[in-house]
Image (tube, rainbow, N blue to C red; front, side, top):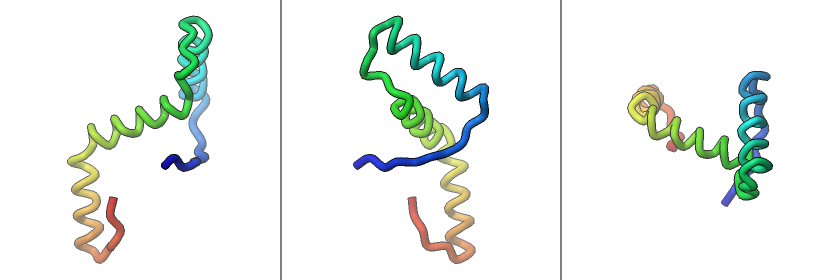
Length: 70
């Protein structure tokens, strides 16, 4: 299931995202490449690469009474 999320990004990141999208979509004719897919891939990589930090954050949160889980 997909969900919609709106968020702000700085102008430099915005420019880089749109340039990558333009190059892949127009120059390389990759019509399946999307900005949403780029963001989703980046977030998945973040969660994988920062798993230890996230686990520590959630442990501290739970130790202080938090009940939400990832």
